[in-house]
Length: 296
Image (cartoon, rainbow, N blue to C red; front, side):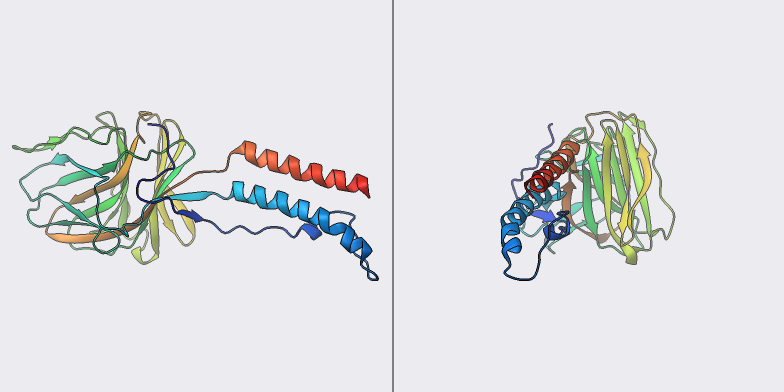
């Protein structure tokens, strides 16, 4: 699926703060003298031109986080839930947005039950980052909860009869581990385990955790990690992965006991500014300054 930045549920961009330069401070040679103000008045039309260039370029260069879901309106019909690993009888996991964020719960059973909760009206393209805010705490119950990118929105389901049924295939996940106060990850290239980890207990301290991310740096390369006030920390980079991974996005959970866990909120995709846009704005601005100098 081609990466999309339209939403059935919300088209609310989250803009990062940008500081614009003062046009009068960057036009070399312009003089504003005391007196009748003639030179200052002659400068005003040029200042307007410079300001217009800065405004247009700034608007294009601000990296916008496209809001996919803030769980402010009840209903999770955009998502498809699939069990991809199960090793015993237990009640299915239940995802809920009744609190204004996404939580996961289990009513009975202690068996492993790994679940993908996916949607494919969005996809993760090269140069984009999938992010989610996380408000979590240490939990006495085994409870993994995070985000995932997958090749399919409806992967083959694991239907338990006996033993362990495992249909994990072509996905990458990063998640909080409630029982150990750590960040875990899992990746499958086809059915091959591309590397999983339970992380390091106490890293990061959940009181400092702001969110999780999956960054697609190339068609077959994905960096996963977590965010604190200090910025992003990459815990692992998956390379040589199936390039269909990213066609569907959503949430991953594995809860092995009776509990309600979470909250995850504000699922977003953040694009990066195109290099061509940066170059065009720079050339346009320098050209305008040069023309103004010749007119002096």
